[in-house]
Image (cartoon, rainbow, N blue to C red; front, side, top):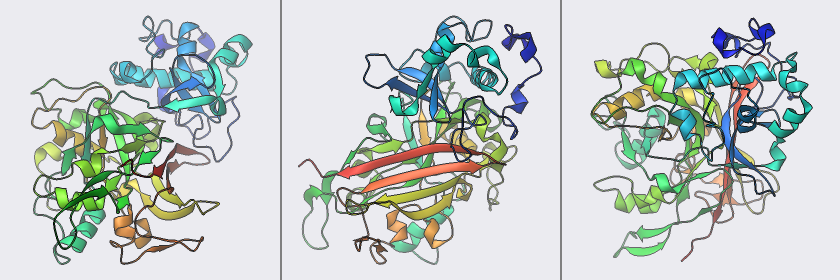
Length: 443
């Protein structure tokens, strides 16, 4: 990696790739102790400066600031590296960067860590470049970080699957026969994925009353689903599965994901083929993509899989993550949001590595900017359930809100906020927020 630091000999023994997650690292950029974006994180996103005609750029979050990687590249900060030449950061999405592969991803994060490290004057003391490259997040509009090629959504939480099976099938035997043998999933709609902050319109669709013929009307059972999403980088050729041992080289990082769902539309349409219009109206993701490199210290073992999985799904090492998750709800009558769910990504039964290995096992090709959702992440405790369907046990246990209101499903004007973070020693690696307000149906 020495060739990655040609301009500053004094940096050679500074921050090397295996030290970028060191809890002792500090930045010369001021970062509060409770920030989601310390130097140990450095998530990637796309932004544009507010109230300007500037084009979108790729940036990295550090504290309350955004570091413009396009400006750094134009100033020669990536000369002598694999990223020299074409400026993949002067783009309106991460896709060109993702296509370069893990060497470029890790190398970029290493270089940014060096430039932001306490005691490094290269950017700190270059006032002209610093003014160009550092932007307050208040002055930055955060955009959808990827141009989504394809989107798949899985059903990987055993608690969620068991709860749904108990409600609608057989409480004594809630899981379908295939559930513990393969990561169940479906192909979603890429065109309706939006970034945090974009309002979501209540969908219309066919609803089936208990008596009589179906009608077309606005959904009355609109729900959120607390999920994580993972984003792929370099893909595979059509017809060439990705062996599970190679899957981590194809996953760039993770985001928060809200798989909005219309339960009443879903209940009528899902037989026999599964989710369609009940899911395709909107999916929200957080703007910052936290890399697998940043998540490395928080890898943990998942639940023992019994029966044992087939060889193509047997992974090396631990590929679950200790990511604390929460959901907050704020109605139009509430002055502050109320936390309604606490969960953790370690509650997934299937890992993201197993999900992608299964996705490509038939030769399905993935590419830079594809996204996969994990499915609703629910824990065993009642307050760790990841959707209103479970939290309110399909309308039988409505939430009691401090405003005096109740909720079994979402109403117009409700705002859903999802947050996630990994707790390190004196720092946290966070994802920011994934939030959206429900707007009334356009019918």
